[in-house]
Structures are given as structure tokens and as C-alpha cells.
Amino acid sequence: MPTILVVDDNADNRYLLLQMLQINGYTVVSAVNGSDALTVAEHHAPDLVLMDLSMPVMDGWTATALLKQTPQLTHIPVIAVTGHTTTDNLRRASEAGCSDHLAKPIDYDALLQTVAVHLHPNPQSM
Image 1 (cartoon, one colour):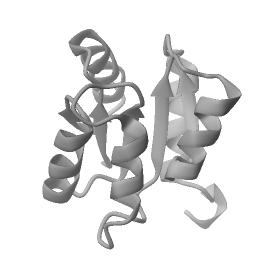
Image 2 (tube, helix red, strand yellow):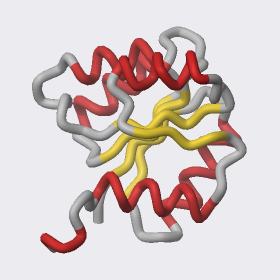
Image 3 (cartoon, one colour):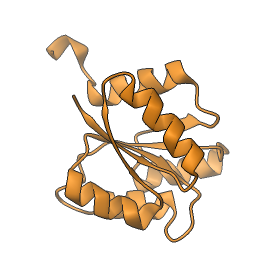
Image 4 (cartoon, helix red, strand yellow):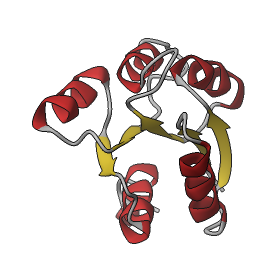
């Protein structure tokens, strides 16, 4: 099963996403900020990253941009998971390299659908 990296400075948010994903058979690793996310991504090579944008130490915009500049990680889809859904914030996320976004609070069905789309972009080829 695919490995998903959940990045969020809020322990409750990390736990909720971890539970939602694990119950559906995904392997989940986590990080508490953008800097930690880069280290975890290099070590675990996840298939997908769910990235909070507003975090201390290193925000999700910066972490995504750095991840996308790392040759062995650049192919990994990054989905912004944020309460900051203004047009400007989502544009910044896209410019940093995010493929999509999920608004907080997380809708369970939207989470699973978005994850599936980015892990299996062409279901006909499976």
C-alpha cells in the first residue's frame, strides 16, 4: 500500500489524518513542520504528501518548494491541507508545487477521493 507523509504542527490534525488514512490501508508517516517533513521525505520516500501550509520553523509553502527542488523527491505529489483557502494562499501553494488542496476541517470523503486521484491519476491504466 502507498505511503503518505502527513505534515501538520497540530497533533490533533496529524492524528485525525493518520486515522483516516490508516483505516483505509495506507501506510502513514508524519512530520511536525516543513523542515521535519524534508527529513522524513528523504528517509521514507512517500508516495504522496499532505502538507499543512501555516507552521512554525518552516511553513508548508517553503517546504513544498524545497521538496520539489530535490531530484529524488520532485515527483511526489503534494496536497496542501489548510484553513487558508484564499485565492492568494492557494496560488502560492500551487506556485510552490502543490498539486491540489484540501480545506480544513477535512472532509473524509474528499480526503480519500483526492488522495486516490493523485496516487492513481489514470485508473484505466491499472
